[in-house]
Image (cartoon, rainbow, N blue to C red; front, side, top):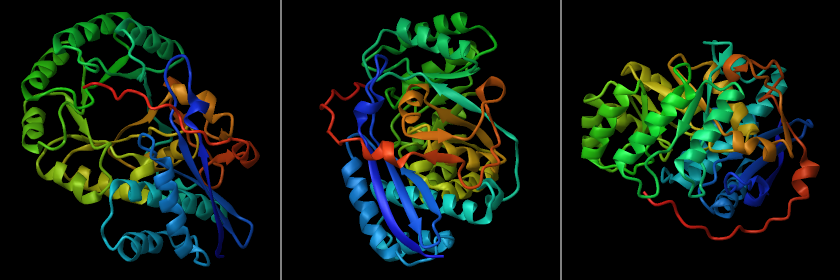
Length: 378
């Protein structure tokens, strides 16, 4: 079997616009083979970077046509060493991860097995997810509380919120979380993401107060350029300190572990790839740390790949799920994974990733760049 063609599709940000939040672009990758098998992948798209990553995918594609798509380790080695000459930045990592995802889809279809059966032994038959409640519109926290309450009513028992954005004082953010805790009740787990908005002292204050509220998760309390301070925060609290969504290289996660700067690593499936996340999880386990799979992507190929990887990671802390992307994603793909209890996902037996993409729908999207929007104020 040989790769016979590549095609990329940009789903414009406007497709996932909603009253709740502005949308984001999705970048899907189709790989064709000379046997007729097709694989679908997805590359992570940072803000307004879809064309840059698309160009990188097309550049890599020139070197992969005619190669065996099942030789995924060989692809990653060549992409990282021969193509990138070991100079891999975040955007190129997104391109490589998206292609790798499509190759796994082909490999599973070729073996007539779901991808998790090719990745190793299963650790679980249900994949736990949490609902991300972020809005990139400047909303009062009352709106966030109401949105989170709707997710709980929909079956989610874990929700993630951002109480410290847009210059919000740490004391007010903590007061908002206290109200949210009372509103959602004791059976819902609240995950807090500071999105690097705090400094060392305010992060310690936040940790102390969140502990008293029964919160167990604080993500990205401070910027990642100060690992010593992040290590100090991690060692001073019983909270899980979570970070890593802006990283894409295994050695970067290794530095977090070496400095004990987090006890939950948070790599994105579509910027790190399935194989690297497995390796990161193995390294994390050796330091008694966990992995939560970040997934700021469509509810399509990237979510499916996240769940295959999550199925084989012993030290999994959960998979991120964006309810606000579901309506947009369902316009062009069908996810063959069914929700189980607490909105977790039951294992899919569909060969490959377990997602069907409607290329005819993708082809109808006309790319139009979205308006330049204000950056969130930390």
